Length: 557
Image (tube, rainbow, N blue to C red; front, side, top):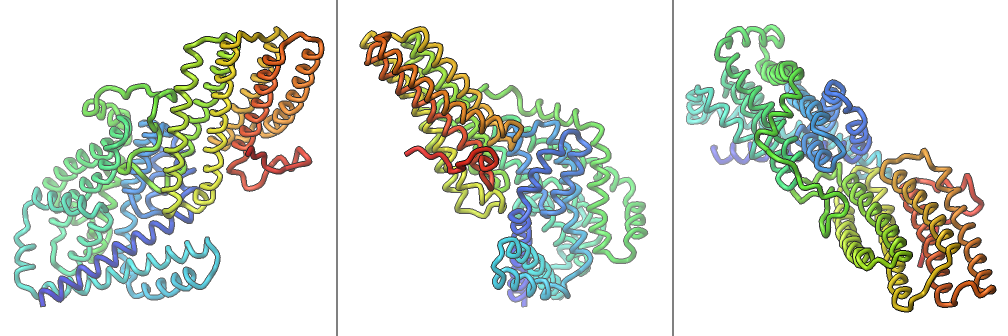
């Protein structure tokens, strides 16, 4: 009997975990990009951040996913710690939604959800319908797992040793440790609290000891974010630490409250929830979290400052000149599918800044013939090549996993952007080669030629800046300027090539110097082509249709 009960219990737990994962994954894929955008925009202060944290976690049913996303945002510089703290507090309230759903015992409707979900998942050929089907299937499987676990726990009461063990579990401190350990292993407080709720329903756990185990679950829920922060920067570690400090201090306070006022707390829960002990456990979980957030919300700045006691110092200022390192793409511990494309985009923005800076350095070296600048161009090009390979490998990796639908559609465009930026870097190297040739052969440019190259470079710099901003930040403020600038660069290229021919015909420059000048002008025009490709890479339709007759994408062989 014992073996049968354990197998049934483990099977039910497996279905519950699978259902929760399936449902959470479906929601992230269907709406993850939009939810992430909300998370980015509406976290300007701690109140809106908290509300967004509640909404986000309540929808995706996972405070771990929300806090890991916050840690990755902080690691990438998208969010600061003072923005992160409000979201983390809200996530702690949002995580109670699962236990509330479980307490209503929707198991009898679970087969209907599974049936509807499977129909939508396998018989309708529309991506969004498939994702909704995945959510419904996960929801149904979750409650089928709960039903099986509930039945198994009903049978487990007939095993004398089990009620005896739980009956002797009277130590609040031990209960907190158990809650912490189990949640740390499962990495989901929602799952642990749901199990406690079922055990309380079956009479295996008394309400007082259940409340202490819930307090332990709150601490154990911090494990995922703490693990995610290990490969992050210092601020990412501090963001995870905010979650831990909040829950540890909140647990200590609630422990004192329960020790002093347990009878009053139980009476309040009975008044709110009636005689249903499952509802009492679920409501206790929600009430504890809301009370903790209310207590700590006025002291969010102090929470942030407290993390500096444990994580001292600052990261080395890497900037975008740092050699052979990824700055925004974290290690495997800090990886989150919901933020994978954001990390790649930030890294691409950094690569574009590096390539643009190198182009300007090379153009300066072409005129000044500075040996240090020429050498630095070659060294920086090695860094750009490293980023090209590292980002491409990362894009290959994330293209093979389930991403939010909007993000999955943009992966192909990001591959193009990597290539376009790398080609800009190659043009900078070509300019450095030209500087070397000019120095070795003692070639000179006329004052007019130098002025013309400077004018064209200024136009290309503006185009790269606008294009990078439009790609990285979805900023379409300069959309029309980008199109007109690209046309202007094309016209400038024709104008300068004619000026070059005129100078040659008047013997104002040597053919060797003129050839270098002509190649540089052509190269700058190609850089402009790559820049406009970057600007429009992730847009569904090419906006150039509205401004130019030909809207074909410019691709250099």
